[in-house]
Amino acid sequence: MARTGRTSARTGLAPFLLASSALVWISSVIVMGILAYLVSEGLRGDFVIYSLVISVLTTIFYLAAFFLAGRPGFVLLFNLIFSYLWLVVVVYTASSYTYSNSSLLHAVEAFSFIAFFFLFFNVLYDWHHGFYRGGARTTAVV
Image (cartoon, rainbow, N blue to C red; front, top):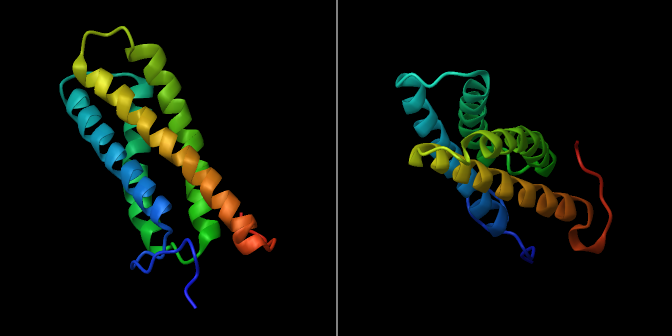
């Protein structure tokens, strides 16, 4: 009997987690590309480098997370850690880039928020389904 709420895709992720994880990965790739370009053009600062490092790490680790989907505790751990890291990026970009005249910096701000938003919902979704799957209470590997 097929389990409800699961997909038979190679990743083993539920359809919502698969779509939102893909959006997180795409957003981090866009942020990484824009910030790498801006750093090569001379934009400097600690938080610019922090944002670039977080986007690079998200790009790398989310490729690995697609293959670790059979272990929901690890996916929850990735989502939890990276949601806090992206929250710092969102707060920094919102406070620094909101009043800039650069459309690239506005794009970094927007895609950082998209990455954080979907990471937050990944945490909620995975937490709910990790603890309350099928009405039975189970434990998570966190």
